[in-house]
Image (cartoon, rainbow, N blue to C red):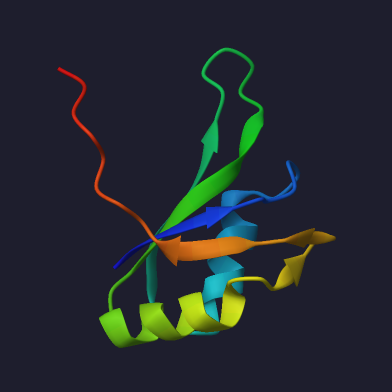
Length: 84
């Protein structure tokens, strides 16, 4: 399950993101999206969890939760759009 995590503090890194979700199940990948020119975090990322049920529980419990003084937005990621 691919999960979108938004409204993150710019200091949050991929290890932090993985650790947040590890409490809910096996995390296979955690990525913070950064600006390609400045390498600064854009304040959101994606987490991939192997188990759909564990991913859903993480979404339910973490959406609206506070981390680093920010209220996280957590939901199932939408498929990437093709811009042809």
